[in-house]
Image 1: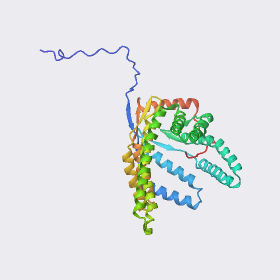
Image 2 (image 1 turned 60 degrees about the horizontal axis):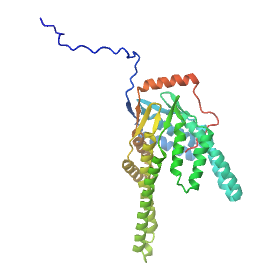
Image 3 (image 1 turned 135 degrees about the horizontal axis):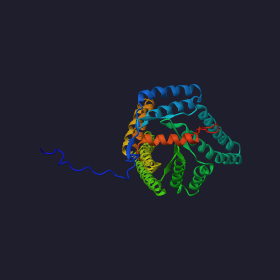
Image 4 (image 1 turned 60 degrees about the vertical axis):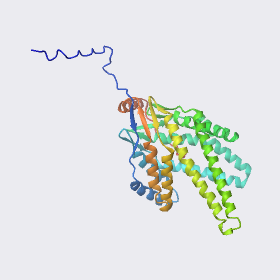
Length: 364
């Protein structure tokens, strides 16, 4: 009788060096998913708008919290949603501070140029600290899987990112503006963390110069086209005063068209540049937003908003957010469950921070 096992190949010997606790470290792609709906958000949007008007703007802080909570809670990664925990009172405090600073700036120049310069100096001294506190507030009030984000930027870095580099850009006629943008993003992301793991921003300055170089070429080309159209129209309506009103209308239409051309390009390129250059520990991000798709979304949104006298605005916000969010993917170096569990252990060992009374939310 034949042995049924005689043709079975011998099994490979077990690896004597293999760890019984080995962890799967194969890269995994986890796409961000946005589940917001225009009809749902319209109800939040219209209530926010009415209450903000009725309270002369005071409710705008609570409106912002409701808006951010809706967008955070409808954005999921790995099956878990983000959340926002901001206190509307801190946001209102930030807006009051911003309003008072702006009001003081405008009034001071009407009183005296010297007083205006003194107030401007005060703004320059205070604003980097407020922006640093705002970044900290937004990070500490954002969570995923019950674990908060954080921001550890210091005042020295804030003054470099929000004061020194803007001044250098101004003094060089904005030749250093791309470098300022790169330094600002590096300050924001290199000081951000999820739990105890820091983000890292690796985009070089040259990438920002390339992006702004193409943007400048598009702007110059668009201005040349607008200028040519205006000259042709001036010649066409010469001596016909009833048609002269068409010239400023054509200029306005040309600038709107130029904005529709440039804004989607800058949004898509900047999003891809930032996310593709961002790391979270061993994990990385990928973004594949396309300018032409954003152009189509922006154009149709604008047409719909005009045709509905502005009531399509919440639907437009949902459409734009869905495309931009779902263009981003997290490429994890291993299971996200293990990563989050490790972060929770690290945070519990040091104590999790919360935003304090000195934190405010100043929109960037």
